Length: 223
Image (cartoon, rainbow, N blue to C red; front, side, top):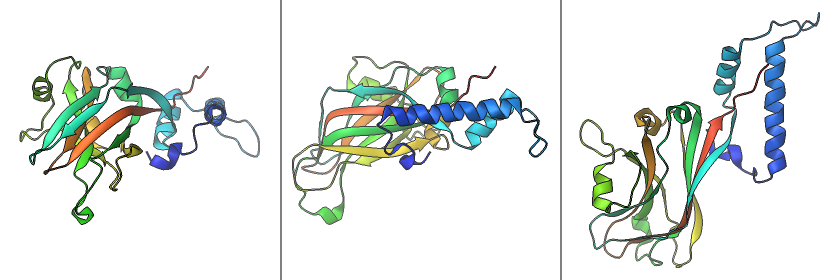
């Protein structure tokens, strides 16, 4: 799903208007038309839902937020920490979700000696088997799902802004739509985790707060 889909969507009335339009469209398709100039048969519910999915008619769903700060510092090697996780997702959730997107209020160490070398302070999404707990990071990391070759199923969401200040910024990650590998690997009972990471001497990844935003396919109520 394109990231720009929800830009300017903060006003609730805009979302309500869009939902009402989707419902009207679904009702029109369900009832058909007997007009002599534009006759068309009514469509079954299953076909209407398929049309809406192909058209990517998506609305905001639930979100999972975290206000507990995260602190990851590298001594040269890769340093990682699981920041927070969603509750285990149900099968019905997985069939309806259209995307997930991470937004963080975060920063790196506040200085970069050579910006041309890139940013080595970032966040990833991973898949955890079962519910997250107060276990030590090592235990939680051992429960992250892996591929057949042993590589971890995790994907970079975004890097922290590369600048010379020590202030926190709101940073939006990439949108993980239904064609992303993440969804192919999710099973009922799995949770999505947010991982903070930093690498190379002096690099750090600080998270102040964050939210995982989900979108779901619009499903009309037909009568």
